Length: 117
Image (cartoon, rainbow, N blue to C red; front, side):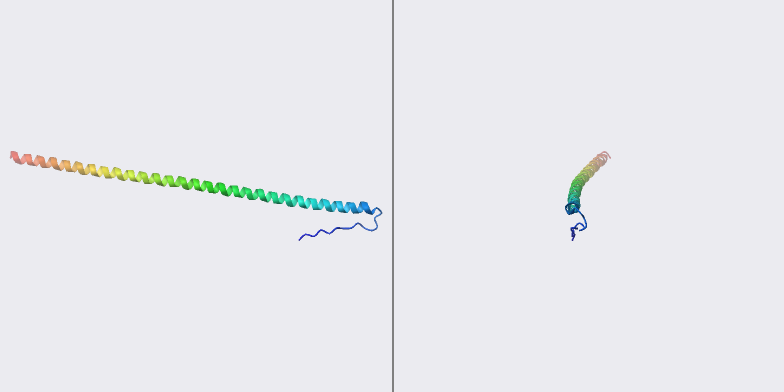
């Protein structure tokens, strides 16, 4: 707690009113300076807190943007895996059909060779 003691002018001063007014003026200037410093400090803290708040909001926005980008990358990766799976499935199916066709041709050739013998 800050106590401000008002000092009285010395009693030996000839002009009591001017000495008293000087003391009161100095004390008034001191009080005004303290109030000015106090309110400037409060405004500075408000701007500082506002700056931190804006920084936190921008960081959260960046984080959400990165999460959305990551989600899109994961979905794209899953789509690529699915397409690769379909490619393998179609390739295996085509290979099996080709092998079945070769088997049928061989069977037909064997049948024809048996007829001529």
